[in-house]
Image 1: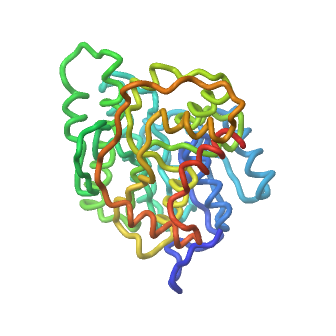
Image 2: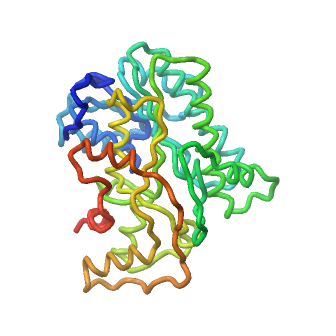
Length: 344
């Protein structure tokens, strides 16, 4: 994988060591994969040895044992949790987060903010760190709003979700998405404040992906959103809770999300930016239609009535231009993403 730096020196030296927190996750594993393809070495954090073992085996077999390291961070919320992991690295991709969708903001938001600030503080202690990339979310800008015409930009924040998340109890399960969104808003805002006030030696960039789908690197991984498509294809069942929780919105191929992280780490022209990773609007019926086309003999659920469409207007051009500098035509097509997601 070659990224066109337009004759400029990469922001972090090729062959140097990059820290990826949450490397066993769906996005984290792909960021590591893309970094390794680009010629970097990777140190990834995991919470337990079981995850560490399969991650190490996966990438050591593909790229060599000397290219991958695993660092144990059992509790990312603890002060100093990332201090050791940041030593000697040139860049940090902070991907690890709370993905429980728990409805109590007190049990989610402070921890996500503390982990992000801990990673940034640890990175700032190391003169070698020149880039810090945070994995935020589309939810930091907007809620999914089917059939509502609206526009978003990288200057916006999802204040609506923050207000909903911190509303008084009871903390009913339907508040989980708002709490997740609030954690991304407040962690990202804390990072921008840190960068402005502390002026660390690194440049901060943020990637804001919408719903990630696509290739799952190993069966040992839950793969979060990507797992949903695999389950539909393999079982012929669409979980009604997914339909209720994940409304029509935009999607992005997880490999494109990872590529944007790499660009934000290495491109000297991408400096203190928020970058949208929104490829195509979709709903669950689009996934079903694509699966039927790919495998007509497969028994699949009927379409869901009344899903609606995401009518959001946005500028995803900057992210697309970055992908083109990888030699790609732009965002990965929807059908190509779904095909990779189910291994066809």
